[in-house]
Amino acid sequence: MLKKISSLFAALLLLPMLMQAFSPGFNKEEMRDMIAICNSFTFIDLYKSDEAIIPKGYNKVYTSGVFGMDNRYQVYKNGNVAVINFRGSTAKQVSWLENIYASMIPAKGTMVVEGENFNYQFAADTIAAVHSGYALGVAFMHLDLIDRIRVLNSDGIYNIIITGHSQGGALANLVTCWLNYIKGKDISIKNNFKTYAFAAPMVGNKVFADEYNRRYCQTERSFNIVNISDPIPTFPISYNDSASLKNSIWGMLFDRESVSTKKVATEQGILMFEDKLGQMLRSVSESARKRIIKNVGDVELPDYKKEFNYQPLCNRIELQEAPYPKMLKDSTILQNDSLMRVYKRDASGNFTDATLYKSPGWGWQHKPYNYYVTILRTYFPSQYAALPRKYLPENL
Image (cartoon, rainbow, N blue to C red; front, side, top):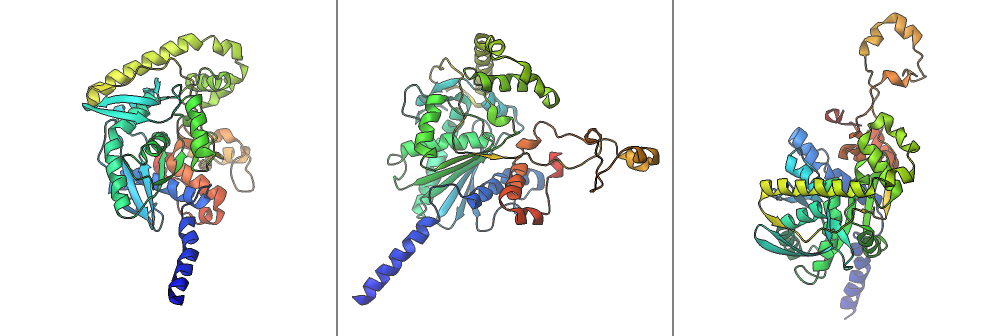
């Protein structure tokens, strides 16, 4: 009897340790591991292997086929925790059409995809609305996702982290909602989900975002990691939010070097575009829908909502800019003695005239590897110092 009590006591002591491996709250180690995993697809595309970037202890057990608009995901295991990682946008046109298809549909309804009904729910409030393209992306993958989660459950794994970068981050946020609504129905109620979305565009209106924040952010189950200079998380346009609208409009119309022009725009001037902008976005979105149908076959979605008021999600972890390597626009300066005498240099040997160096393109701050490097530099300085590659040459 004493032996049984002793064994029970030991098990009770062990239980909190097991639970601690998957608990609510921001965890910088989890964030680091998730952005490393988000780089898997990039490394496979560039180097045919992701071995150099996958964190120790994580084993890839599944890579899905390609669905609908070139969406794909992976499943990893690490002890009693699994990870579902959604791929971001690819170079294929249909992948970008998913982003552009930004008309809002109700957050609860029915789609018809590949001749089958998909009864979906991302929020409870009937006023809540979500991004058509990303919701359609979930629809194409939903049956396979259910199968994968059931396989994980059959292996005794119920703790699942959902992650993705860019379009993959948007899908991660929507899938988080959908999975929590089908718990106890299509999947076990014992499943626990936690989300780290990186560089994700916005996925729903204010009512949707408010519910998401109550259910997943305030409970410390979802986090959105954003580089403050990355333009992608500011999209799609939110035309009922004048400040967001100004940034988005001017960011679209002007390049990085002239972005300061937005400072001279008044709210009244920008808001004059509201009606025209709504018409334009609806037209663009409808064109995207027609082109998607040409690629994937007929799809039926609920009627569009008459708004484009996208709202960012809470639990926003902000990162500083990723440093861009010093590269001269004209390296022949180094062989010109007269110019070398003219241009001043600092203690590190770099020219003080910043115009001599190349500037990063608009997409530099959005690259998944640069998110990884910035997270190491911010949260794990010793690991950053030991990192052999501070940037990927292919990203320059």
